[in-house]
Image (cartoon, helix red, strand yellow):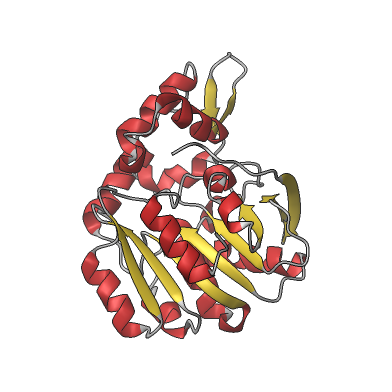
Length: 285
């Protein structure tokens, strides 16, 4: 599939004591839609998807605290509760009373936390390969590569190789397209190399430090009132089909779509993903 990118503006909002960055793809007078990335991702993870969404929505894509161009927070506050509060602060800052949420992996956890806490403010929600329970095999895999990730790369080809080796959904992406996607994850270092645009404290619990607090996500999930689209990679080691089925049993408005041949997590621009999103979000063709 050819790459499609939309125009955007870099903007910032104050979330408590933190300055939080987001991309604004425009769309005055259109309903709002907010995209939230995964654990080590950033706002640019939705660059390819945004043009499709922008046909009907005013699209924003967030840098979660500690990632991208958002401020770094206290190390003890890199947990879903504070991420959800940041989302609430951004929406209040922009006077957004109701929005659609699209969350990939950790972004889906943030979306569930927010929609469970403020159910009247979420119109629809898309959960990309995530649910209230996480498959232990996938959690172990992510903990392993996050906790042992190199802190420095010589060049962008090394960054691309790291992603190809550790992110199943990126393994088959053409080299130039992969480099375009991962360049937003790193920044120049004084020695001429590249380092992560990610607070090292995000990785510390995964390097053998104090474990992060576990949350019972079924409790906020049960409070969600809006329709939910669950997109699952058929080869996912994070969202099991058992959990996805339980989600549809717990919430009567859940639609489940699988993307064949894809692990964690779908890019959301696969034909199956785009068809599901078009139906669920009523996107014009």
